[in-house]
Image (cartoon, rainbow, N blue to C red):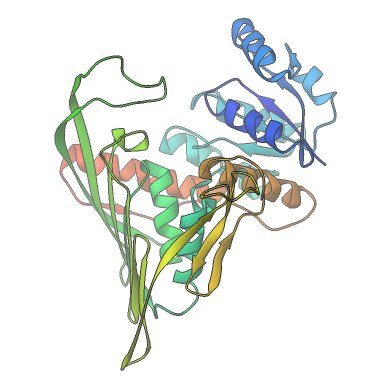
Length: 354
């Protein structure tokens, strides 16, 4: 049983609580530290989880690690306090808001504070399948990735993993394209009437890593939109992945072509329950859901994988997504925004957390 506590009552908090409720044989929430009384009462009523008014009370419940679900400004303060107490932390993204704040966390990395970051996108089923194929050798040397899936540091994290990029420097050029779109659902639900959103902008960036290149493309409404689709393209010397379509050469005369196929149970008369089983790549599984039979959406499956990985990390296992990686991805994201603001190409240099 994995026991964890939560610091904060942010929007993401409910994801962790839903996962624990859906997987009671895997996770136990020992409690929460939530400053705002109204929010604490709301979460207790909805999820039946005990909330505490002090951090010390939460630590007294005996969690294996804590999850911080806090504002950008508050998160680094708590990371430092919990590191001083020797408490392992799975931090929400990003770990700090500005470049200066990221640099200030470097001492936590160098002194070995037990901190990982809950960057979930590479653990989502279809993205995990693409990463597996990209690193299998079937595509040859992967040199390009284009992504229109998620914002900022999330997108950078996926691009780096698809390209197998570490802390290399990069030249970054970015532009914003204004867009007007009919309003759709958002975090607060569906719109009550048709509205047109003004002043939305699409951020497009080129990241030049030398022998590898990435294209980032995102517009804010994509997370909930009915009409803005996600796109992923990965290219190598022997093949490519275009969304769910995979093409590569078995030899120079033999092209292989198949589509990644989601396998979701509970459909067309299947009585096993409604859940995601995995992603097939031809005759082989490119991804298998580690939490079968649980009714979790892809993002929740990925977050649950982060939580299991954190438990293994606390027990001496490998990083799942280190504080250093999180700093790197948000640093590159900050440069994308600055390049779009200035219209200038910017150069990402080696940072102290690398």
